[in-house]
Image (tube, rainbow, N blue to C red):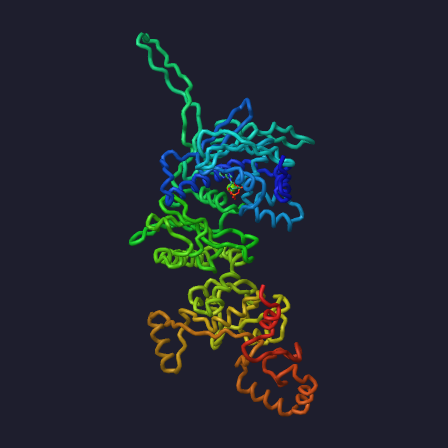
Amino acid sequence: MRQFKTESKKLLDLMINSIYTNKEIFLRELISNASDAVDKLNFRSLYDESIKLDEGDLAIRVAFDRDARTITISDNGIGMTEEELERNLGTIAHSGSEEFKEANAQSQGDAVDIIGQFGVGFYSAFMVASKVRVVSRAYGEDAAHVWESDGLEGYTIEPGERASHGTDVILTVRDNEPGRDGEEGESYDRYLSEWGLKDLIKRYSNYVRYPIQMMVTKSRQKPKPEDAGDDYKPEYEDYEELETINSMTPIWKKHSSDVSEEDYNEFYKSTFHDYEDPARTISFHAEGALEYDALLFVPGRAPFDLYSKDYEKGLALYSSNVMIMEKCAELVPDYYNFVRGVVDSADVSLNISRETLQHDRQLRAIARRVEKKITSELEDMRDNNREVYEKFFENFGRGIKFGIYNSYGSKASELGDLLLFWSAKEQKMVTLAEYAKAMPEGQKAIYYAVGDDRERLAKMPVVTGVLARGYDVLLCTQDVDEFTFQAMREYVARDMPKVYEDDAAREAAQKAQADGAEPEVEDRRLELKNVATGDLDLATDDEKKDAEEATKEHEDLFGALKEALGDKVEKVAVSSRLVNEGEAPACITTEGPVSLEMEKVFKQGPE
Ligand code: ADP
Ligand code: MG
């Protein structure tokens, strides 16, 4: 008996003692493994000429035996060698479960939730099976091997037999569990029925690219005997037939009006291992020089490792129904790294390799279109589904801000309108355009304040001072905010009411409007200003004069203060920033491009 590795054991424990209500996902997981195995062989055959495949033969079979209480999932894919059985089924080393491992280490034991969050793959079989037997023969090998386990301590691997390459996963389904203490029991019998399995296949694996076949019982009318009399009543008989249960057409090839939202959601959840519906489904078909289908999803929540360096962005890349790459990073920009989905193009060359990817013109053309589409869908969400958008922004806004920062502002015009910030005046999230639209006449800049805490920021004298002049202040609490603003430098507000330089022009415009003309609009460049740095240029001439006079008047005092503070401050002076009398007697501001908050971020060093 070989022992499971520690992490695998933990996962198995959870599976076996699972009270998770979604145990039925086990079939989806096993079928998706079967489909992956067929994919791998199919893909290999593309460049390995010694592999002769008849694509029509590639299939997945599901069978059950009610008396023996077994379900068998078979594929004629790539199969596994003895070493591969050991490595793949004895340890958690694969993607979904790796995440699981981390989350499990962090969580304080809410197992149910954890299971729901990840595609936990092969081991999910133990949620419904008391024993799992895997018979596998790797492509190109003569010998087959049998892996077997009850999921407790360990597993065995022994020589076995299989007619050709591929894998059978045989589950011995658990006995029904009676309910205890008035709770409902658990019935596993439905997995041992034709309708039960068909239902699961249709619900979870409908769009698997290979046929999922099952022997089903059908009924037909017996032929009418030659000598049947007038009172002959038709007779029926049962017969068995191999039926393909899934629809097979990839979901992204279907017209979006022919697919229900539920189908899209189910596809997303099962393919990308999420337990929440996507916030947005984007599907489009491109024609012209380059033809392709794309199906993209904006997740409803941020994966917990999104901001870790292990996170891999990318879309699955298919060509003629063969998966070329699971995560093609070149298809999405970093700031849309959260987008999941599929691009399928018959035009993309099959022998594309990681090295040639970046130089692939076709891919870059697709990537550009994909990016544009995502942006416009997000804009639509922002304008028509604000609540969902705010949640989206909470999840992924930080990455978009980084996108602007990392582009040194060159992405500002594309991404700037996706940003949301907290408005001190409105007490809600606003876009920069909304901020600009609400500005009183004469306001020339967008003001923001940066700090750890919204409430505290709102009370800061430099903030209340600007608010008192009737100008809104954006309260920013994310580390990247100020860097983003500095990279942007300014925001161009579109369609702002035109400001007339001289009275004659204004009067002429007013007259025209009175005669029914539309009010004139113009684009306005608004500087982005931190209320705590530099000269805000808000004081009226009178205020400036007062401040100067006061500074002169108290020269001795300020000189003494500067002397006492030494190098800690650049200068001490009277400020016209503080408007509300009696609120705060003094404030600290900085000059130059690095604010106090940015200094803090720099001191923390890179993440
Ligand atoms: P994942 O599919 O995320 O890699 P699983 O737990 O579902 O994780 O499967 C673990 C590994 O076992 C797979 O990566 C694959 O290498 C192997 N495997 C599982 N089922 C099969 C199969 N039917 N044919 C070939 N290999 C398989
Ligand atoms: Mg899997």
